[in-house]
Length: 92
Image (cartoon, rainbow, N blue to C red):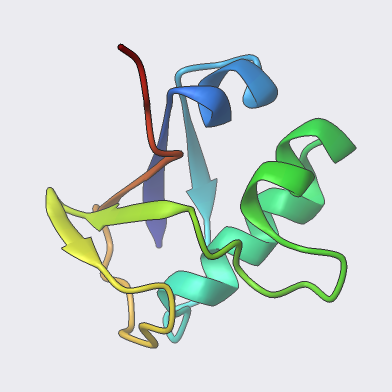
């Protein structure tokens, strides 16, 4: 099945693209998809998405079809889902 991964903020800069369409297995969960994206890209994006132990970065904001999910979410993805990954934005 196909999933669209959109990158925002620092994740977009690290990925070098605004989005990717990836092929995943039918039983793929949110965290597995993020780890797969991290493995498929260079170290710059990997460090934004996962820590040195392969755990999802605590500050990473994750949205599944425009609904924010917690990083521990193990929900199974569906064909055509959009997963948006972004880091918090601060400014003043």
